[in-house]
Length: 178
Image 1 (cartoon, rainbow, N blue to C red):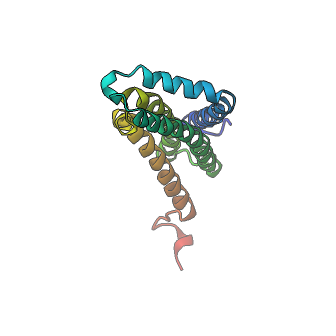
Image 2: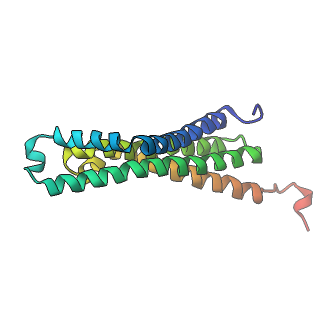
Image 3: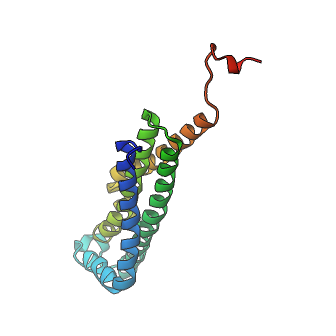
């Protein structure tokens, strides 16, 4: 790993944390589903009366969607973390240590952790607010950069790969002449 730049090593670490987050959350969901759902219900029950106005159907709808958000957090953690890790290792295998490679790896690594955390926080906040939309809006400061960094990391990795496939040749390079 010594030939891999420090930023890419950090990116590998972050992507592995993203995978651990997703897999760990999946394990907790499988082993403690009832406790998770009880926690979400307690959050909804502790909301001010004005949030649900006694509308049990609305509360049940928010709770069901909140559980769906916990599942999204689990799936996004494992999937984005794995995609980030593969991309970062591809950058390392190319031997590219330039700014674009380092920034792309870091962006993907950070995004692989931030975006699934957003979904888990939204799941936890929604029952208290009485709305999954309100929870997503309140936490968009995590979601937008997390998703943006993930996309930027992927696009940067693709650009680095493209540039390595088609390296520039200088005008003085005799091998470039017919």
